[in-house]
Length: 281
Image (cartoon, rainbow, N blue to C red; front, side):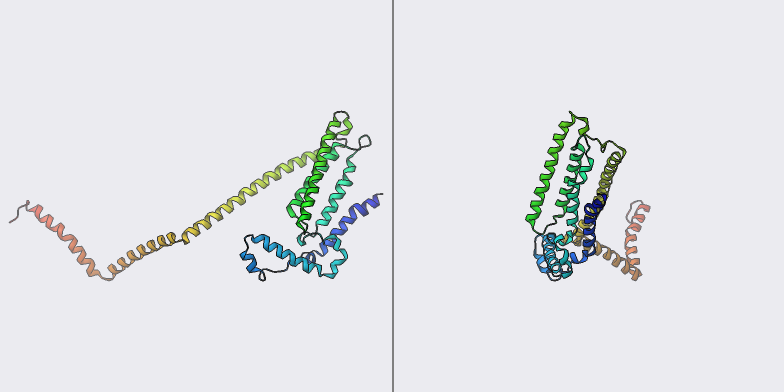
C-alpha cells in the first residue's frame, strides 16, 4: 500500500513537474516582439495588456509548432505559457483535498474540525493562487475556475460550522490529533506574525525610496519647465554681469583711480568748510 502511495499520489505529480520543468523554455519561449509591435503598444491606452496579450499569442503559436511537446500537450495546452507549471498545482490541490485530509481523521470520528478547517485553508490558498495568475488562456475558463474555487471555500466553511456544532456533543469530533494544540502550530503562528511585520517594513522602505524618486522627478520636471529655465537664465545673467564688470575694472586701472578721485572730492570740500568755521570768503 505504501509503495502505491509513493508511486501514484506523490510520484506522478513529481514526474509531471520534472517533465514540464525540463521543457520550460520551450513551453514559455518569450519571443521578442517589441520591435515588431512597438507602434501598436505605443498607441494603446493600456500598455501592459496589449503587449502581454500579443506576446502570449505569439508564444502559444511557437509552442504549438514544437513537435517535441506534443507528447504531453494535455499538461499545458489549457494554460498560458508563463503558467506552464499550473497542471502540477491542480494535481497537488486535488490530492490535498481528497487524500491528505483523510489522514487527520480518527477511528471514533472520521470527520473532524481539523479536516474541515484544513480543507478551508487549502481552498483559500488555491483561490488566491488562481486569482493572482489567471492561468487559463480563455478568460471564461479563468472566471469559471474562480467560481468553482469559491464554491469549494463555501463548502468547507459550511462543513466547519456544522462540525463545530458536533464538537459540543462529542469531544472526539474536535481535534483528536492535536493539530492546532502543539508546538508546531504555535511556531507557525509566530512565523506568520513576524513575516507580516517584515513585509510591512519592506513596504515602508520601498515606499520611502519610491517617494524620493518621485520627488526627484518632480524637481527635475519643474527645473526643465519655462519658469525654471527663466530663473536659471536670470541667475546666470546676473553672475555673468558681475564678472564682466569686475574684469573690466581689473583691465583698466585708470578708470578705477578716476572714480576714486571723484568720490573723494566731495569729502575734501566738506572738510575745508568745517575747518574754516563755515565762512565763505
